[in-house]
Amino acid sequence: MLSAPPAEINSALGRAYPDARCELDFRNPFELLVATVLSAQSTDRRVNAVSEVLFERWPTASELATAEPLDVESVITPVGFYRTKTASVIGLSRRIVDDFDGVVPGTLEELVTLPGVGRKTANVVLGNAFDVPGVTPDTHLIRLANRFGWVASTKPDDVERAVGRLFPPCDWVMVCHRVIWHGRRCCHARRPACGACPVADLCPSRHIGEQDPTRSSSTRFHIISPRNS
Image (cartoon, rainbow, N blue to C red):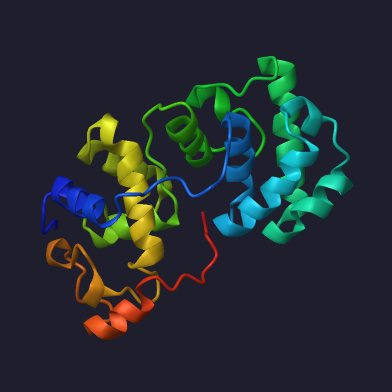
């Protein structure tokens, strides 16, 4: 059951995180697409470090499409699952070259045809590189949407639909950024910092975490977990 209108929670998160944005570094849709694929089960900081090297060697889809897999693996090893991710980024680069004239497609229907790209990755690219509204049901959004009472499911498709119904499309991308920032910085999976939470008064789950404001503040920005998204 909702304890506050979703728009009120979104507004409070907006005040708490005015700089909320995608934390993957990118200069164009291709870089964001590849970085998002690499980010599964890894941290954005690690992906950003790897991406800098990767795009220095293979800056375009046409160049990455012809890269030797072992060479790519040697660069992206730090992000984990490097063999699978190598196959995906080389495969999607080939498809972009062969089927889309070397240009990252700008629709959900086309993006999800690329190797390693599902709806979540496609929505990240659409929202941040093409300004196309989309809901990105990553692990933080799934967790917090349940804690806020926005949905009672951990299935990404259910969360995407539920959040999409609660907000107008023009708000979808920023809602996701704010919720993800809050999940990384305060509403942690194991020990949410409820005593220092900027939306505690609005949240039906405000009693599940650390209540002491001092102890909560000491853990609020302590981010050590991989980004499981």
